[in-house]
Image (tube, rainbow, N blue to C red; front, side, top):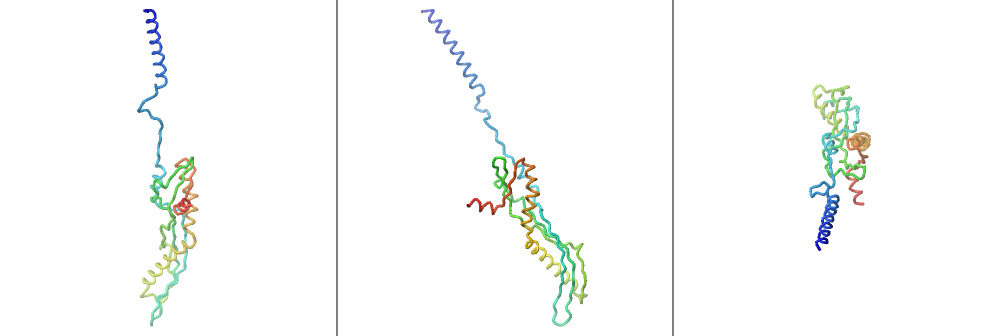
Length: 202
């Protein structure tokens, strides 16, 4: 009886050792505080675009010959001919981009851009000049101011009519897309909000 009891104790001890080793090997890396996976979200692209602000992507230069006349009832009409040079600039306001405008799919970064805009248009007074005037000795300043105002409005409308906004989109593909691919290390697809909205509705 005593021999049997001793054998039983030895078997129990050996079983306990084997079980302890098994459990140790199986759960030695287990910890309630162990890190199962690492997920990192980067806002580098968004920050870079925010820093860029309004990104100028197209520049249309204009040269216009403006004939301005002030019509009077009795005296001769003051007239002026001006040669006006100016420019219009198309841009994307990247500060309007929010975090949910940037999504990733596999190795592709999809960026929903704000619509392009005509961010500025102006006359370059240093390159503009008065070509000729008639009867303008008392009204020259009024003639010039009105002529430049109308010329500036014409630059704005001409730029829009000539497709500066569409050209801005095309230049975004050439300039902005490689920049974002370099920052993110991913293939970049540029979409515009209105178009992206219509695609989601489909």
